[in-house]
Length: 397
Image (cartoon, rainbow, N blue to C red; front, side):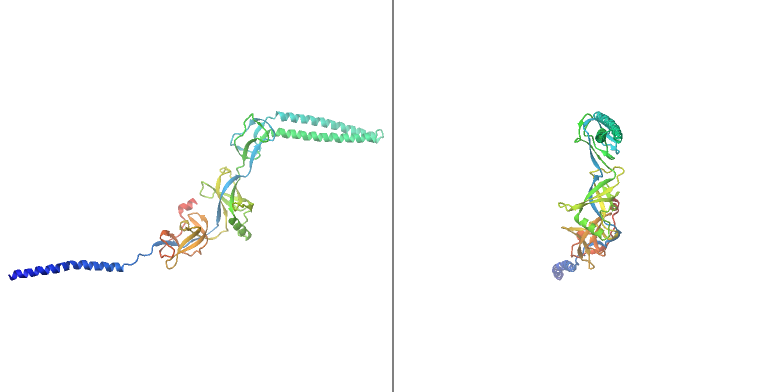
């Protein structure tokens, strides 16, 4: 009996103690978990890559879009009327100065020239007779064998004969000119268009026969905004730059399929008024075109020196943020705060870089990677980087 009583007591103790023992680790773990959550640190500021702007010594250029124009362009028309007898070129040929292009039936003009020549010969014969008569009469008057009035008449006849010779000489020259105009020639060398008439067509001075354009050299015209024109004028007045009206100002041109400025030239002309509708002024440069690669009417880019060589601040194009009409760079201060800085950009440079004309001093720490994680006024963790031209873009530029 005693043994059984002891066993019952033991079972009752286990029923009380065992649940407490099992519950103790779970409660302790829960307490430890609550303490860990209470003591957890906030996440660190987001990481961004920063670098000081790149400084280089170079010339700034202003870039414009231009259209190529022929230095000379002519509409070919005949100066006399008649039937087209021959066409002496193939459509699209390169022609030389003075090359015969069209021949108009010359026979009517040959006849007119022969008639004028005969009339001149007749007038010259009359002049010789008038000279002889005047000389004889003058001799007779000197011996008092002839009246002075007769000599006056002979003098008048001589003057009239000379005038007739002059008139017929001019008529012959006019007939010979018309005969020469039956050969329509190229006024200058260049590329000819297609014929607008065929053999046998009757034409006159109003008939367009074809056109010719000179290809070498060639113009490239462009429109310069008023602000850029003023900047050039002020720079020229201060002696920093030569005037854009100076025909020695160098320019560079590239075609739409080119990535480099492969065609050097010089400024040739700047207009004398600013357009009231567009606020631009017309400029023009001339470039060599020895291989006739460029044809009038094509588009191309042109760059004009916008400054003398000087130190410029460069940043990656990808680091520039557009805020409505403003251009902004995100910089990081000494305590890790993101500070936006409004800037004024200049022209782009090879390698994906961009000139900053105003807004930076050159010692700022500019965010060049991680812009999406940078918020103005927020803290960031800075990682040092370096601004360099991207090789693939530098090769393309």
